[in-house]
Length: 239
Image 1 (cartoon, helix red, strand yellow):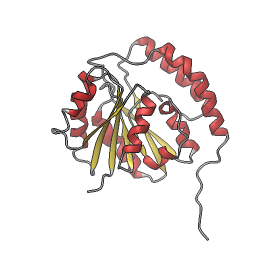
Image 2 (cartoon, helix red, strand yellow):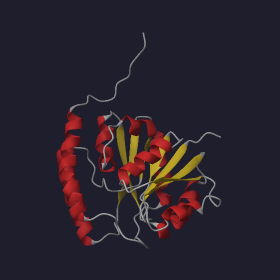
Image 3 (cartoon, helix red, strand yellow):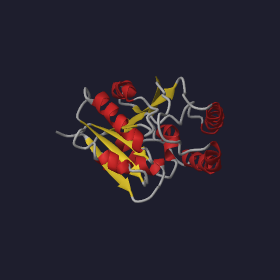
């Protein structure tokens, strides 16, 4: 049976989280169309790959990819999408804070309108530190002012989008933070849906507020340039 949906989950040093998360994803996807669940181990050193491999007999839909070194979240998503067999991609963060039970809500919105290219989650009650929430709010406001994409929570890892749309985008590291703006650039519509957000139960975040600030300036200018150098989606008719 051909695969229709591909869940892509990049992970780095999440050995204690991948088992519960993979089982939750499998349960959420059970009623859906033919699917696969792809975890990409981004150069972990804590046994994440081994924990995932041990689940393959329990979860037949599970596939495990592994980078030979740490390349970042965007590269993990990119590797997963390249390997995916489904026309629809669902992404989640690997720390368990995104709730797989929300996946069907995103899929229904994407399936309802062929002009929608991406559906993004909006974390309504974030279970993060106050400093992280404030930094995220300020960063999203500035990025929205620059890019005019209407997004208020680009950091939510729970998204559903069309594989061919993602592959049409110009890839760069950190692209996962700009998928909404780049979807609009390609001439597709975007939808937003409120989703649950949970406390991290194990491990540590791989991001810091300062680390994100260091790369955000150059990324914003680069994306702004890309937006100004594109005229949107166009069809070509053979004569």
